[in-house]
Amino acid sequence: MNHSTHTETSMQACIAACSHCHQVCLQTAMNHCLEAGGKHVAADHFRLIMNCAEICQTSANFQLSGSAFHRRVCEVCAEVCEACAVDCEKIGGMDECVAACRACAKSCRQMASVQH
Amino acid sequence: MNHSTHTETSMQACIAACSHCHQVCLQTAMNHCLEAGGKHVAADHFRLIMNCAEICQTSANFQLSGSAFHRRVCEVCAEVCEACAVDCEKIGGMDECVAACRACAKSCRQMASVQH
Amino acid sequence: MNHSTHTETSMQACIAACSHCHQVCLQTAMNHCLEAGGKHVAADHFRLIMNCAEICQTSANFQLSGSAFHRRVCEVCAEVCEACAVDCEKIGGMDECVAACRACAKSCRQMASVQH
Amino acid sequence: MNHSTHTETSMQACIAACSHCHQVCLQTAMNHCLEAGGKHVAADHFRLIMNCAEICQTSANFQLSGSAFHRRVCEVCAEVCEACAVDCEKIGGMDECVAACRACAKSCRQMASVQH
Image 1 (tube, rainbow over the protein chains, first blue to last red):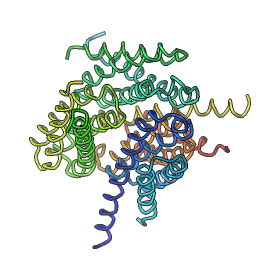
Image 2: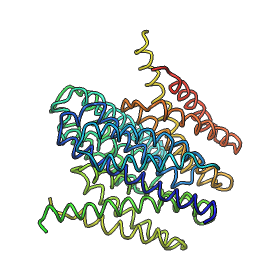
Image 3: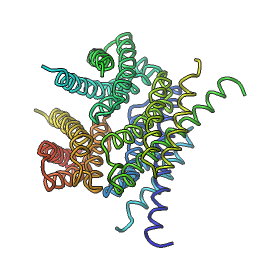
Image 4: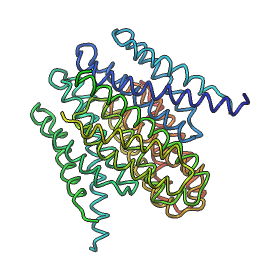
């Protein structure tokens, strides 16, 4: 596999990871968290999971549109996803969300570090 | 003022109303509601105010991009804004949000009913 | 399969169709269309494919967040997708986009007609 | 004016700058650029102005929702806005867009550098 095909494949994987993480975070926040209440609707936690959903959407959209700035957005996305994974793990009962955030953080860190 | 100038002016006003309502709903939900807790984070209320923020953003974007479907989005936006105004009024303490939703609903209903 | 499980399954399928259509439209517009030029960047076509990407994103988000208004957004989404499919087919060379729009329109029409 | 009031005022100004830049970029791209054609629909230019519109929307939303990561998004937003201003200036005929991008870049750089 040559360099550009490899980049293309990595990007499709990263778009899929961002899109999955966006969906899981939004669905978890707006259904599981709102219905569970308590620590699940604590301001810091709820903000983080909603912000994670939004930056994943933006990161996917930058990659889909071939933006020259996609690595910069992936870098921020990885940080937000990592923080969201840690927070969801601490509260508990959100294993799917933790896994989606960890996978997206890893994929975005790889995209962010690719040389152009 | 001729017909097309009038339409143009109405659309700029509607974009401004949608953008303002998006901002007020998002800021109210993610700060006031999360910090107040109780009825402010009840699932149905919180979903409605967040959905209102999102459809206002989409409605503004359809008008900004000159979409042939902007009236259809304005129509749905007006319904969501109206429901959100009623719900925020019932819970109380969110007067700015009620006013922004009412103004946006009115402006979107007007846009939706313009003949093309 | 009982009624609510059936609804749940249909919604997951519709979220997947909207998310796929969003991705294909955005990627096609911002890469294939911009690079092909000519009819591919005609104002009406380009607006339609970008608006289709946006309403699909909003439709997916309304369903993911459990919105009471998701059927209304699905209804508009189906109309935009249908129009986009027809336009992409007329211009030609965008078979993946036509298929994604047709599948999303069908799934959204089904969601819009579900009794609640 | 104390520190937190000053931060609050700066953030409201930055939200307004991001929202204005989002609107001007989206409206310019989808109307002026698509209708002018030629250099205005060159892939690199069109991608940049659309990406600028999107990151401004995300930057405004992170600030509106009180995100702990808003400075990181503002930093990336400032870079994209700066690049977009340079590109629009080179092509010409988009003075409002150049001004909106420059103002947003300046405001976002200030937000990004605030000590917390």
